[in-house]
Length: 172
Image 1 (tube, rainbow, N blue to C red):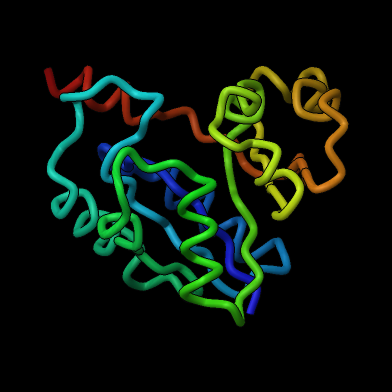
Image 2: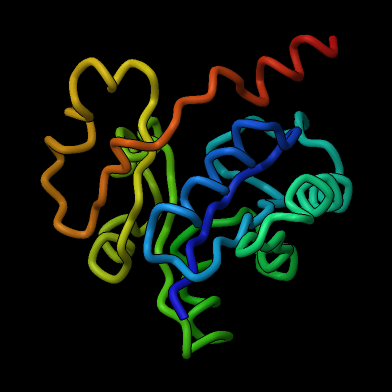
């Protein structure tokens, strides 16, 4: 089975997350897309996250009627902070029958060399990169110029003009 891993804080989950997840499952060769709720992102400031169980339940509710999408708490049992390379190793061990593909935003591929063990990830996993609005004008050059063979730029993916940061700011 081909499984996509769409990790994130989902703090909060919003229509952009769900819309993109739905597009990915409908327009790629993935059999399932797991929205992997991260309990602790090492690249984000501490203290801004809602409780992990609350975020997981919100993701479950948001995708409950969409075939192929799965809300996952897999990282909740792993050591913290959550490093993607460790998560992918643990997933391979727990589900050796699956082929995993990482799904990340173009903003993350731009700083991918800052991720722990990024070369391991590049050498062992396919990566789907969804674009940001600014890259539409350049044809995804920020991702393409990296030249990694396992990276697939999802140039036709829809753009969603929303972010969890915007939603949190509006709540305040």
